[in-house]
Length: 61
Image (tube, rainbow, N blue to C red; front, side, top):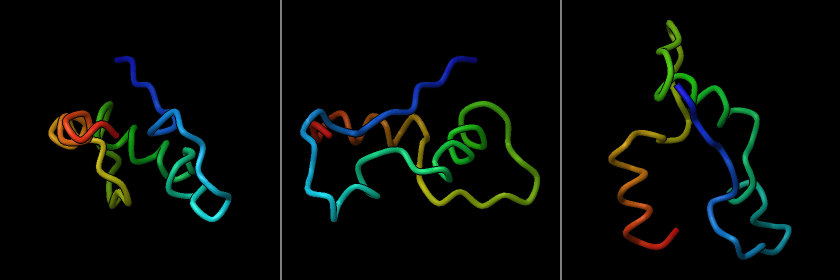
């Protein structure tokens, strides 16, 4: 399956917010775990489920 991981908005924030805006190393594992194949014993730090993606899209993020 195809998954795309990128910045959450087109507006670039101040450098203090870069960790919340730009993809972080752990986000790749979270995406693989929730969208491709669960990783045994892994606990995701971010929510990349369909429901969360829909919620963010409705909020314009």
